Length: 118
Image (tube, rainbow, N blue to C red; front, top):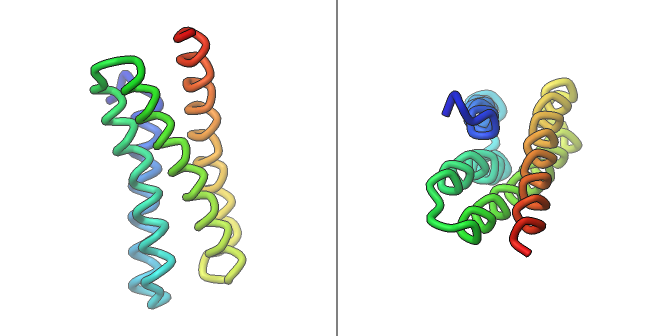
């Protein structure tokens, strides 16, 4: 994974999402929105890991597409948690920027795999 910057970034992002979710549960006693954030935020890296083991270009593109969509959903939950005052703005901004970076990388990959496809 160290040779794959996207995989490494998504893994480190997932770790931050896990820590943030723990904070919501332990400190804020919030269970519903944080579970959604945890599911979407960790799914990004899981789908990237699956993409790295893809058996075809179409399989790779499909997994990256799913990871991209999960990054968009993650940004939604982060914004909602920030705007509902569960998440400090500074933490939300950092996580949103990191999710946006992942989204941009994946979108670029999707564009290039679809151009090369055809």
